[in-house]
Length: 407
Image (cartoon, rainbow, N blue to C red; front, side):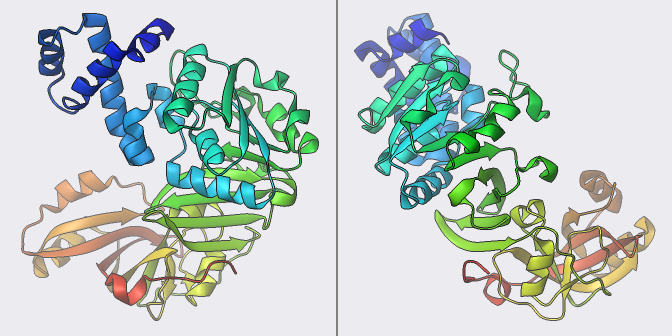
């Protein structure tokens, strides 16, 4: 898509084409294109409408009903913050007293829209002309164009003296190819500029990849990992007066916060034998290096100091890790595992793994399962030795529930 196509989609004829395309999204693309042509929609407009309709359908997972009025690029949608996370971040910025925010590299505007809805004046800067135009269109569709304006340009040239807060989500995909960038030095804006923002505007937040190397986290910043409905979705660096703990794992469920675990990220959990219950910590807890802090909340231990499975004698309610009851522990042997599962009549398994090179789907085929029962198979290491744990999930009401935020 280009600027002319976007402009065409914003005309009355384009709006009508988008409405028609919305009812066809998710189906046969050839049949959808034929349906629009038969309705008299020009080919170029039909192609743009169908592309947007499909992107809007996918975006509903991140943005809910608001996605039906927004404009997207494929790369922009992939990097865009989920609405529930953006809203929570905006509320935290507003509570910290931020009134004017620079969103440097605003993309399609997901975070800026949330901040504007929270009453913050947002100045967006976006280098790509099409993405900047889409962000402007999204601000108008959301009814916040008076509080969120976008300029197309170089984020490093923006005068941050105009604001009392900065949010920066550097591009982590290469322009034109969409390929992921793993070296922060190749981000746009560059990493040295991003990490220097807090020296100029203390209330700075930087969105980063969840897999960020902890050695890159600036001294004094709070690094927060956020999980939504069990899926690790992002990490962010909160700088200056916004920082409240060195490391934090925040868990959201059905749009609300259900758990917040904080710590230094350097503690070591005690190591001991396998116990009756196994906890598989949430990805936010693992990435934040807060497994030791989590283990303390369930009086647990690690069976191997390098594996983030926690073992405990009792199932303690916690949102920070899924709980399973261990029924069998055996050294890894395909033959022994297959025999045990046949003996138990297990025909359906979920396969979890940490510290194992085995491919779950290949193992599933090799097991040749048959039977009415189900089980969880955990591939791991215990004291360095490859080990299989046969488990049953603990019911949610027994080991998952509300947990007081913070520590």
